[in-house]
Every structure is written in C-alpha cells, then in structure tokens.
View 1 (cartoon, chains in turn green, cyan):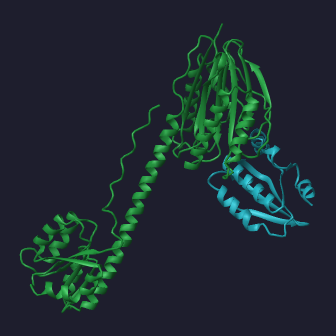
View 2 (cartoon, chains in turn red, yellow):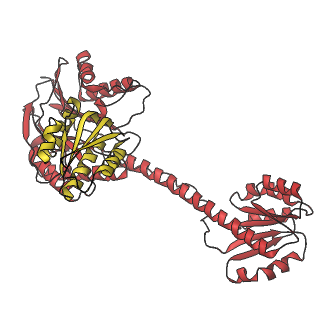
View 3 (tube, rainbow over the protein chains, first blue to last red):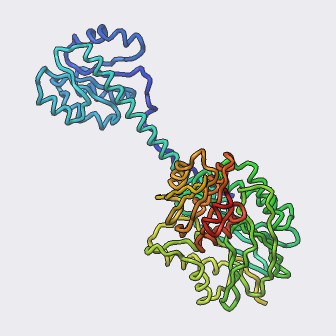
Length: 403
Length: 111
C-alpha cells in the first residue's frame, strides 16, 4: 500500500502574537523623542506590554523592519530627511505586509493625513504629542492587528483542514484494491470515482479458502471525515469477518452488530456481499439494504437480482440477513454498483436510472469484467455532461468465463 | 423546506413535499423538531408529496425515530410514493419504521 505524499503545509503568517509584548518601531528625526517616549511609556514597557525600537528616517526604518521581522507596529513622523513618512508607508508592505502603522502629523494637516490614510496608515496622532492619546491609539491599533492575525490563522487552519480532507480522500482511494486476481474461470474488476467531498463508497475483493472469492460493494449514508471513518471501520470489519469464513448472511449480521455497538452517529452503510465459487459459478449473497446487482448475460440482456430484504447496517442490532444464491452461466457478469450510478443527474435534472443502465449492455454485450465497468462509467459521464458529480460512483463486476 | 402540520386526537401529522436530500435534510429535521410538542402522543410523517429521499434523508428519519423512542412518542410514516416505497424497501427501512398506506391508518395505529 502506498500513501500519497502529504500536501504542502500552507505558509504560516508569523506565529500570531496575540499576547505581547508588542514591538513598536518609532521613526522620527527629532533626537528628543526617544528618551521622551521611553519615559512616558515606562509603565507599559515595565509591564512587558510594549518594546520600542527607534529609527531616524524612512530608510533606516525599512532596514530595521527587514532585520527585525517581529516588529508589530510602526509609529512614524511625516517630515524627515532622506525618506519621509509618506514614502515609508508605501514601502512597508513590501518588507512586512502584516504590520500596522500610525502616522504623526502636524495639527490640522488634513492633506498629509489623508495621503497617509490612503497609503495604508491605520490611524494618526497630531503634534504636539499627547502621550495618553498616543497610548490609546497604539492599543486600539494593536487590538485590530491581533484580530487580523487571528483571522489569518483561522484561514490557514481552514486551508489545512481542506488539505486534510483531500488527504483523507486519497487515503480512502488508496485502501481500495486496484489489482485483481486473475483466474481462468472468472474475471473481477472494480472502480470507484469519488465525488468531491470525501465520501462513503467502498468495494472489496477478498480471497477466501478453496479458491472462493468474496466481493462487496457498499455505500455509507453521509459524506465528510466522519463518514470516511465509518467507511473505513465498515470495510475493516467486513474484511476481518469475511476471512472467518462465515456465509454472507451471518457475516452481515455480525458486521451489523459490531457497527451498531459503536455507532453514536446514526450513520449507516448499505452493503451487498457475495461469495463466488469459480468452479460451479454459484454466487451466495446477502443484502444489507443495498440496491440489487444486475446480472448481465452474454447476449446483452440483463436482470436485477430479486430483492431478498435486509436492512442497512448500523441502524438496529440483532438483525438477521437472508442468504440466497444464483448460478452465473458461462459468459454472465454480475455488476455490483452504488446508487451514484443510477442517481447521476444530467443538465435537465433527470436521473440516469436503471433503464439506461440495462440499455448499455443491450447495445453492447460486455466481453470482460473491466469492459463492463468501463461501459458504465463512459455512459454515466456522457449522460451527466458538465453536471458536477454529487455522489461517489462505484462499480464492481465479476464475470464467469465463456466455456 | 415547507411543512404543514395538523393534530388529530393527540397525533401530530406532518406533511412535506418535494425531495429530501443532503441539501435540505438538516432543515427538514429542524423544522420537524420545532413543531413537535411535549403533549403529542405520536408523530406521523405523511410522505404523499415526497418523490425522492436520499440516504441523508433516511438518516433524518432514523434520528427522529430514535428521539421519539426516547420520549415514548409513537412514530410512523404513511402514503409513500412508489419511488420512496422502493427506497424504503431496498434499504430495509420499512422493516425498522412503521409504514402505513394511508394517513388515517397511521394515526389510528398511534392513538
């Protein structure tokens, strides 16, 4: 069994700093400002709320931003030599897109304030600096920054979750057998096409004693990760119980009780299970609420297996499952499938249906198990056209060799 | 999903129309749960107007059946269309849930 490589992890925005201390870069060419800020902000500095770094102009600020990527906030003057605050604002996103800026402007200088806001400043304070107001403004800006980071983090989690779903879907596919036994007396082939959401169909081909083989097709009543877990445990229980050599009726009864015992979710699974005996062509089967298979004859005519009752598994315990049997004639094929085939929709919201399924083989009697499945998928695709597939589609064909 | 309700001698009859599938099954369950009273001695789903039910819809019925069993409230379904009847019969739900031909029979069996 090979597992697909895990999908690449989405790039995390720097681990969201949501508790502080927050690192604040103050950009101003006035040398007096630095000691003033350290003095007036001494309490939040001592509390471990803020840490300050300083730069004299825009160019120095950009250099500091590049070398200290953990800076959360820039507080910048507008008029400075070499690079002014408005130019700095334009440059900041290219160095660190996820920080906030507060601009310091002259009182009433609405034009520069407007320009600064248009260039992405979050807020402004005016000179002469009111340190109480500066502190409020810093706190408010940081709160916004924290919310923004949390939003980014949940977006990343969502991306990761989607990747996990894709991975679950790949694992689900990868546990289904894609190589089938070859035998001169019979052929077996199966294929599943999952719908976009990780879903609940599965099939299995199980080698049993005395050259008998067990074949199963199943459909879990829901989609998503819980359904795929239910599907995996159904499949494991089915396989484990099948190898014990019970007949199909007893097997479904056992699997049903096991599934019911742990089922808190009211999920259920429909399973058709048959044991095929290659020498005689006899197929012993039981049906747990699944749509009955189609028996296709070598002339292209076909009949559905009669319904023999049997409740979907996982709903109630202590149920019994009737067992029945038919003989495949030389050239006959039994097609086990899920309702993703017959309930596939076209653009006119019509269902593919059982009549179209039977018509496929009247037109072209299949010559092998694989061709049987190929014909079904081909016909369903042609019928559905561009309509998105809403359910998993699964086919398993077992055919008795011509004499 | 729109549902109509009427009470006959303590039994709540819920009529629904259209399809029940993965796109509306949660709504359907919610609107049914909202109309059931503590005083109801039984609940009947009249499916005369339902022409399709998917496995997601069957799960809703299973959930309802379990909930109502927990409160000792009777539960039945009636007037299945032939398509829904077939789904019930294939999935074996007709062996787990009481299915009646007519609303009258369903109500009577719960009174």
